Image 1 (cartoon, rainbow, N blue to C red):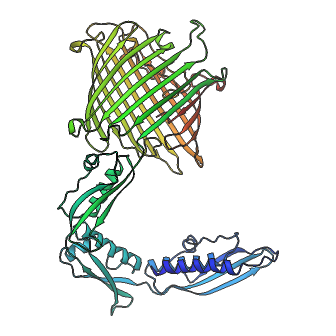
Image 2: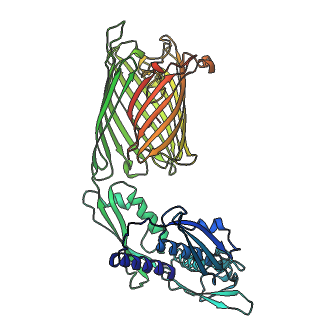
Image 3: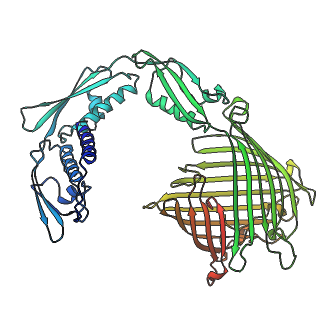
Length: 596
């Protein structure tokens, strides 16, 4: 504390001097700091001492900064128990020919002081032995006064977690008969246990009280535990509905045995509008395909945390197919709804309806128009793990074909940021069974799995990789895999270097197998700009036994990133890596968000 005040007053004093007595520039060069030499140091090397200095050799010499550096060095000594350390001489010599100032600093370290006995008084709730086992300082350690003060704060925190929030601790350092050894006495005033009184909510207008109350694990009458209060505050803030969520304590200033909590919230805007965009282009064609989307959503549509999203997306191929004379396109619409507390339980329920229309090379230029929907119910098993069971129904207009499908899905997500992850894991798995007793026109079973991992390797570089696999086969009323369910690969989100959905398989096959892998190094450049180096690989086969490593298709390339809070604006250039690499045959991709 004294050192902090000294630095503060020193800084204020320097500012005042600068304002009142601005140095006169006589037109001559300013001195630079030359060699800095330490004399008398044994506890620390010159390298360790210089590491605490802001002043650098070869840079302009500043008297005030240099003085602060010497204070930081003395503070480092005192943290190690050298309480009498001081500079006894500073010899400064000017080298006129280089306009440099050499400094020789002579330090008197003194003797190291150590901690003797650690004693306690006034403690009844926590025993001496328990306190000693929890302390970070031990007998024989260097006498570090800041560490002693932190230890006192730690004892206060220990008592607070047992409901004694008014506990105070005063530490006293006393000399002993043994030279350079000091005993420490912690004088503890425990105070009474404090309990929670009334818990109120204020500030919410659109969000119902019960939405907030569901996040509370606190109850009136239980012990006041600061960490639990903070945890409940974070749970309310994590709802994403508030710009501010904090507890105000009533009765703490008066040191009452019962403290009332008042949760104060400020509601955020819950309606939002989003968009996405992208395109593919090659060296030969400026624009091959453009795509975009628009969505509107509400995160609290009925005041009970329900979420509603309306989304549309479209893409259009600007070049006609040479054989068919047709353009590829997609035109999709979605309506999604989430009920976070299904039937007032801890289960979540969601439903969606959609209309999709497309004409792609992968569907052999046949127009497909699908209308359908799915619903699912599940819950969060842990903070990162969720599991759901659901049902999907879909109608294909062109063939009057229907799909009745029940599925099970699970996901795990420990990423630190869902848009720009720097560490963590994201994975999902889904199993579908269509037809049989469920009815419909199609009988098939399908499994998909996706696993991604992110971790830093130093200097802000992120290593990211993903493995993805899917398989589908028909049964019962045997026939080829339905055209709308055939597995596809290629494009800016899975296999760069290839056009969107360029890779598919035999139309008469009763099975499909897809394997896809991605590796990416994400490298910061400057400010919000970054770069990426990536390799993608994968293929689609007509049978499970047909998978061959030698048949994997691959692409590699470079990318630029402009990082935004909702993911990067991504520009990638990728080429196919077959027997030879032709950089003139690559494709450009521009998208919003990472590929994975």
